[in-house]
Image (tube, rainbow, N blue to C red; front, top):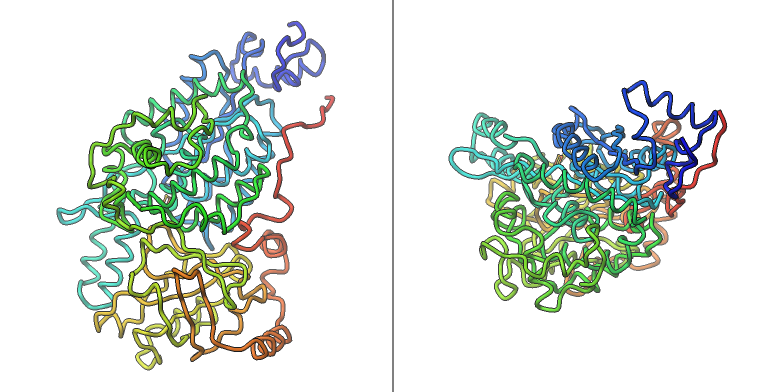
Length: 580
Ligand code: FES
């Protein structure tokens, strides 16, 4: 062994013929690794969120094997390592509670180990942003491979979408339209293959965001999990990351402000999840790009939503892939001059436009022409006013158009438990014109900011045929959900935002076109109520210790990405050498 000739990071561990090099190599050799793997090959980490408790990522062992084949073929040495896998469906109180924790695991695993580059294997909602956040804080060469969506759900001869059908059928049960038996019979048909939610929920949205950001190979977002082409893409990503390691093509060269602006425009075109506003902000914060909610208004609003997928539209991710996937959408945007930065660099070394300029569209029903959009004025609607001084969001493509300008009396729930206790009360003083308001479900109030903002409607109104109402909260909403739902109110109630002092009967005004969310009380009254609220505050004993204490003390508000204040920023991959 001679001194490492190349400037690979892993040479700090394996590249010296001395006591330290001996020790680093020797322990690795207990896995049956021959000498030549340590002789200047790029060491490629495969950061794997496999877990049988994260069903959406449960097929990742196979995915990792295909990445390894590609890494070996290109002359690299793959080493797979696990990181915390926060699956959406099982984890309580909500997977968002551990997104930042997972990102810390990723960051320190990458920085502390002899890695030259990483392939990030993610899929379920929070795993994708967590891995990108952690890797961005290290700024190493990285490429993302997501697990791909499940095949279309099937029930009684029709297609059903992950999550979305649960909201639809459960409302029908409450309205007495179908039996609980019929509801339960949809369970196995909804999730019938490996993969992530097959609607344009948060997982599919974040996979599209990653592709638009340029940190995946083209078509990564939509290839179904069980399609052999998903494994080809994993193999090719394994090959490509070796080149990226040798070229030092780090995330900071891909995750530029221009890339985020492309992603925001793409989110509007796909009718993406509201959660993207939080996750993109958090990822941007880790790489030093200053995004704000106003960027979503400036870049996203007015963009036609052309992807006709549930929950906003009709189809599912399988059809999206067969129709041409995200490249077909980006081509449509680009040809109309709606791709803000076509020259943005992507992981394969080409510009975003070079990747998509000849992308075919095989189905105008699924990826619609810009002049026949699903929603003409798509994009997230950012709202401000005395009820949300730092902003709130609403997804117009998933809302009832007639409710986008609305004035109604507040029916207030102090928290999610209060909502559950009273929503079915036949004596609840509520009409179809009321505005349902829920407090204390924000980042600090319901640590993790649960996806409960799409409060189910009062059963007595459902029975009358009411299908949507304006709802306002500091919570998030599942990307698979829908309705005229104002989310992410900031500051949240628990942090002393005005939402904390809204009372039953207050008049609330929503005006999406004007970007306004207002509670009709004067400033003097607001100040008096806030002072009274402050006086009454006590520490929730559950917040006093453990990870929950760290979370509540340090989590930022929704408009700031809900990262921990001490994690924002890029800390690079340098690590002090240590002598054995
Ligand atoms: Fe994992 Fe939807 S629950 S992707």
